[in-house]
Length: 483
Image (cartoon, rainbow, N blue to C red; front, side, top):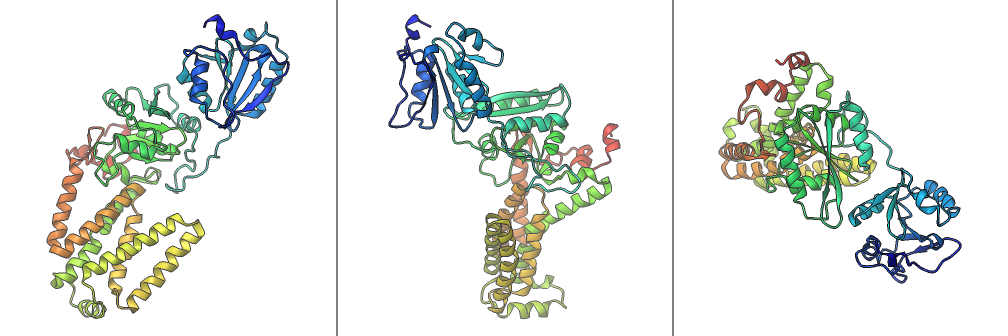
């Protein structure tokens, strides 16, 4: 730095604290344009929440956001600094806890992360006084389990890294720190186990993340939509979770895990469709029980996809498929309904989606009441008014219950959307429409990839020896023996 950068404001014998706002711009010392301080003050010129503490007799200024720093640590530091003379300031700041910053990007990252920045005449120091308060670790609300762990990620990436490190106790667990965006840079950590994860996948994922130029990414679930390969597909291609135990299992399975600061979710890649059908409860039970539950989930997907569509197809085109004993009851139920089955089914399914969304957005106790009371009252009123039939209400309710069996909320939401397509196809072409829709769905899923890995692996392409780790859950002993 040049000597003329030593000229600050007039000397004062006691420190002053200023708050920068729109009417009081930060008073700038006579520094050259290349100075880090000059760039810093230019970038934060109209930040009214930026606080400044001055020690003019020491040629020192400290900038910080008062709500991001830990005042219990900052105030004792100020008390010590008041007793320091001009000759002692440099040795005082050369302590190991104070880090010298030589780049404006590092200065901005530090102050926005909760540190205070101390400027002398020719140097910038990071004062690590971040506020340590975070949301307490609690059980996951979206991924409940019975036999698994009961802790979940929080919005602090440091806490989330600690939760993973406690489960993956190995020096082979590696981390890569990346920044997303151009102006409002967000920190993303990629985690993997060395020697297990594909290096090619790591480099490809790094390339995709670093290519993101958008600054409006505030959550992991938004980030993965920027880096997936098929943005127009309704199906999720990155597995997101707020459970550390799931994350640790994915790491041991050779996946790459991504964490984003201020987001309680981690993403895992590469994954397949069958990863979204797993739950940590599967690994806490006997393999026979877990396999039965897994098969039940696949049956539930078929039920929620085609049960309502099958009702529409049968009542519109294929009455011969109805058992003779049930036919009079069905005819009596539908005799008062003025709409064709496809309109009747779409109306009820849409009404169910409204109830589901209302129950999710309202407070917990009110949402449960709306879901139960609303469903019963509206369903009964619809039957009495002749808008729909009793049997269709049973069919739609069974489809809704089946959709709740899917462990992943993202996959469940995708299947609910596809279900409307099956209903429309069955209304036009009956069972042929259902078969046609199923063919289109399978072709679409087969064409998807996640980090260049097939979405339907190990079915397409087929690897039968991996069936016991995806379609079912084989014994752990066989897996440890390489069987």
